[in-house]
Amino acid sequence: MFENEKISMVIGRQKNIALIAHDSKKHDMIDWCKKNKAILERHFLCGTGTTARMVAEETGLPVRGYNSGPLGGDQQIGARIVDGKIDLVIFFSDPLAAQPHDPDVKALLRIAQVYDIPIANNRATADFVITSEFMNNEYTHDIINFRKNIEDRANTL
Image (cartoon, rainbow, N blue to C red; front, top):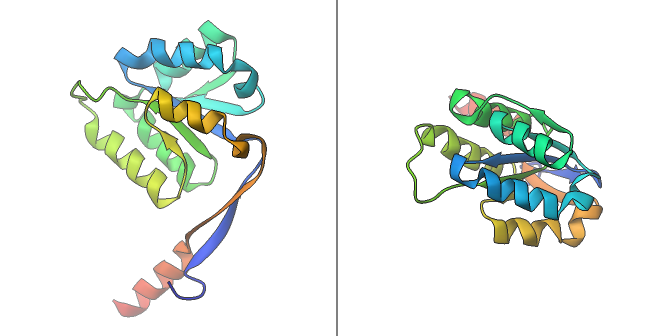
């Protein structure tokens, strides 16, 4: 990549964490949040509708809820990633069940990749992430310079 094609972004010490779980994985998410409550309570939490509500009720953690995934919650989380307001996604997905909102899930995964946001799709990965040295420290990462990308594309069309 050429100069100015990437910009550095900083994920702060206090993370904005999105919690998402397919229906068959919601109890796993609650259990995981209980196990990691001491860590999670130092960060800001949000999540898709039912997951956010269940985690908040079962753990006592404050979780800002968005719409349920099939009703646009995954897209709301994706938009928050684009706005730089989500730093990490914990998404316990069910790989064995078809999801009616699968295109939304794929779009969320894609946008997390585009913005170089850590995303854990299962408990093992979530355990590795939550115990990482970066959970309590700032983390600098490079993302595409979207402003330059748009300018370059506009000049070539």
